[in-house]
Image (cartoon, rainbow, N blue to C red; front, side, top):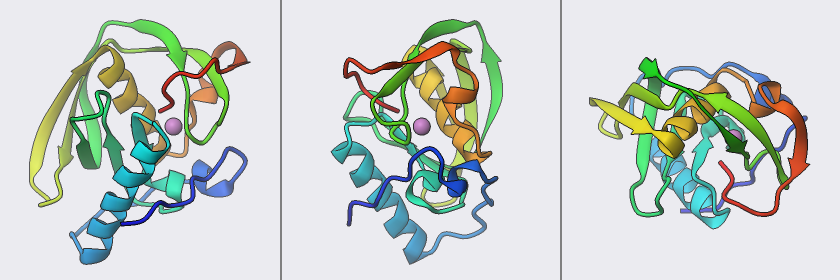
Length: 158
Ligand code: NI
């Protein structure tokens, strides 16, 4: 496993639409392990493949530090409610901004064995799912921010 370099806002790779994963390979398994290690090392709660420069539809999320979720080709199939709160991103270091997201989402994704499963989340997990999936279509939270970006006091970044 290895820590990968996190790409930052302004880099073109963060603005691209990612491609679906069609088969699991040793290289993709290694990418996923590296993404988890990179996310934990950076104290993030989520990381999307384009953030390490790979245009594939893969995200990792762990909002508790002990419950890693790996989502391949994820899509949101249900959402409801609303939450407004501070959001950050490892690709926008030192900043935070207010974003409104659904309070509940259900996603369908493939796991590392390319088996389909559902992931439901509320509050922070719902926010993280929405935030990370946006990365796969080349979108950053700063496009959705309500009001100015602020300097982060230092909370968890997504
Ligand atoms: Ni992000």
